[in-house]
Structures are given as structure tokens and as C-alpha cells.
Image (tube, rainbow, N blue to C red):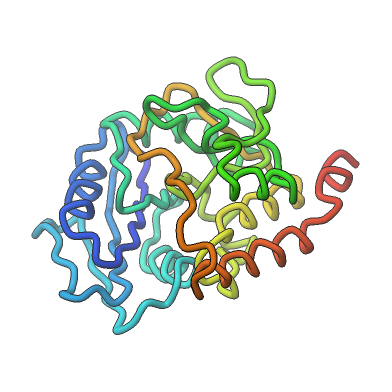
Length: 248
């Protein structure tokens, strides 16, 4: 019997990108997929394929990433949830590969892929520090601090939210994504809270997924850019001493 997986895709004015993401999830092999699309106030409203495996939830306005993803997860009942960005595309075997460490690895709560054509540390690694964030903001570095990678999967502190595969019971025990974050870094915060609770986060070498590499920073001095910077500062303060606590 194939394991049920809920794929939650948040969208906001994504058009054909959303269609490609949904289609890629429905083409998954080795798992029993249901797709939950949360339309965060798109204009015009998002349109999805007419398929009994697809559920569409509409919001009148953009509620933010964390609330939208929590909303989508609450609709499903599968024991595993994959949070997928609308500009990402799964390969047919991605979900099956991401499931493997959660089944085989003691204490593994979340797994993430290595994105096609990118280094593993482009999307996962050690918990970001203030200097890491500054270097990325200045476009001096586009990767995170790497960890020792080897075997079919390896432990990391976090993986970005473009594709996160999580055990539902762990997601619910952690309280889901922190809804006080409107847009970032709710994905990193969630991973670090899992790690601090004693659970494992891993990156899977054989789980391919297409997702565009990080974009150069634009609009840092805009209202949204300043909001994001404030959220990052709050995140760094919240998780100060993370490495020491996890090591202990």
C-alpha cells in the first residue's frame, strides 16, 4: 500500500507556474498524492485542474506564507505533508525519495531535496548567522554553510521552504509555521524548532526537484524589504545560541 502524502502549494498570482507545480505533484509515483492549493488572494483567482485529487482553498486577501501553509495543511489528513513552492516542480520520484529517510531514519521529522543543477548548500546547511545573512544580502555569497554530506541523506540544521517534506505528527507538535512571520524566514524557523526539540532534518541526494536558484536581492529598501529584514533580525534573536543548545 502506498503512503498518502498531502502536497500543499501556496499561490499568489502565479498563473502557469502553479499549473506546472500541480501537474508535477500529480505525476508522482510510489505515493498516494492529494494536492491542496491555497490561493492567497490572486487576481484573477487561481485556476486548477479538474481532478478529484486536487482541492482549492481561496482567501480574499494575501494572508502571508506561514498562515497560508498552515491553512493548507489543516485541510489534509495524510501522515506526511510536502510544502511546495508554486515555482517548483517535482520529479516523478521526488516524494518517494523524500519519504525514505522518514521511514528508515530514527527521529527524522523533515526531509528536503537537492535542487536540480544546484549545490546542496544552495538550499540547506547550518543555521544561518547574522554574517551569513549579511553576505547573502550583499550578494557576496549565494550558498549556506555546508555540512558533511554523505550517503543517501545527511543531517542539516535547516532546508529552505521551496520543498519541505514533513511528518504530520511532528508538524502539529511544533505548532506548524509561526504565523507572526508574513514572508520569511518561517521556513528556517520551523526547521530550527524541530531541531531544538530533538528531531532530525535531512537533505536527500536522490530527491530531485526543479526550483530556480536564489534571485539577486532587489527592493531591500522597499516596505516589504524592510519588513523582511525586521523578521530576519527577530528570527536571529529568537534562535541565538541555537548551536550550543542543539549540541547539548
